Image (cartoon, rainbow, N blue to C red):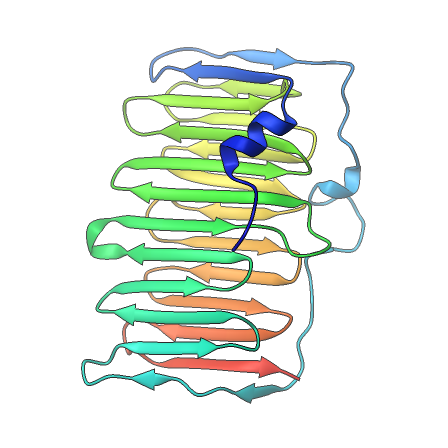
Length: 244
């Protein structure tokens, strides 16, 4: 997955990097720029327009995979550039736009993604390592970084947000031009032309142009316009297929 390095990208987009350091103890911090409006109402959920993230799939041709004596799965599809591999409870997933690594026994989760053609996404990086959450997102050229755990919260924005509110602890709401971000505890919610829900532990749902990606304690699933992949963690059942 090739893309402009995150910090280089932030330097390129950004005249207005604003650091908003949020303490665990505190009241409410408000910021508003009345001369800025959302780029388009269709960037937001519930705007009344057709959902640009909905897509349909037709029949599926099953694809082969390998399973070793320990039940670990290895799948590689050179046509779509997709691979999936398990080792014990560890999961590794790659396609041309996504990289995901999971080690549940170590409380570790990492997701990196760049946008497909037609997506506003420049990059998304989300990592959970124990109690610490590290989020980096650039959507439509609007970039944000959030790093937080039980003791600290650091937020950096490329440009002044339309609205920013800190209710103390890790409860933060950010309203930007292209997306809204809300964190509660370790949970993360993003709404805009990309949608993400992460409970801060092991339950994640991501929808972007041409992809529906989900991972939780029971299942790992990736569905795109080209390929479907489904792994049941409890049983080890695995299925992958190409849509035709």
